[in-house]
Length: 438
Image (cartoon, rainbow, N blue to C red; front, side, top):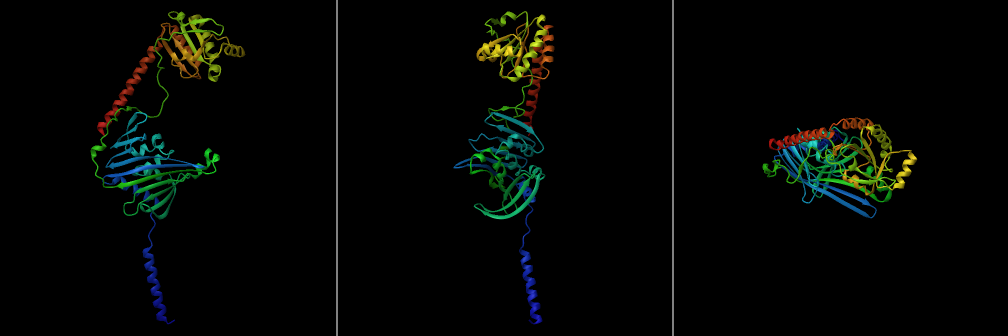
């Protein structure tokens, strides 16, 4: 080939290569795409959309499907997440640093304050309760701060490319969260990409489920869909004003806490009873009122803590017998022979009465065994212990010493309960004040 032709060919090849290289697009950074999506939603003039969960369980021939849908609205530093009509899911509303969470089914709500309301909420058990613990993860992706927190847990990220969906082209990224959860995230294309779908890979979890051992064909999938995004919606700011949900009770926390303060029976008149001993004799509680301190132990032979507590309580009562203390072990709904056999086998001599049908126990508000009740000479319940504490003997001894000496332990406990209730009410009033400040 002539030299000038070879040069021309090389030049043409160079031009073609240059033209090809100009069309090669740089793949988006998955993490930056995640951040940009959240930022786009949060900084839009007014954003609205729908977040829905789709849960699908396949067990052999049977398929179960369920889901929850929320309407999401955001304007400036205020946002709301409201469940679809008929749903009993939570409702989240925020204005500035103040946010409320309503549990309609429970009829309770909380008022909270945080510099980053949504980022704080996604860490709560309420958020995790959506879609098998993954609800917080899905909600995090519409908030920049929550997304930044999530990014810190990302151990691997990969851009998978574009796919065509029924709703148009989508960019797909795969993320690994703390090395044990893989999720695929779908985003719109263009200058303002927003999240449209989140699909966790639950294959490993499904394989370890007991149901997988029962069915040859078992599958468990969860999809989160973000649809109908409008980043310039016409929203009324008045819709974001926080108010107390009608008919709901304000609580400090949704988490159940162990009852603080004295038992509800403390300070009340001790319910009277007449019960039989295993030998058939009758015991009337009225015989002790006005002259004795009474110790009752509600128990049963089938209850291991009761069996462990009974000898201890009996020893304490015996040591105070000459100081005007009467003791009865109130057995719950067992036969006289069962109780006699038990006492003989354990070599116990505790004075037992039989509470047939647990009638006496119910009158004392007993909810668990063992329960120990101290009644003062005035006939009022002074102390209630539920369960077997490590220092039960020491506690009962100190309390009996005080009661024999004429102290009113119930009055002290009630005063403490009233003071704590006043403090709790003050805390709730302070929370209510935040609604106006928000």
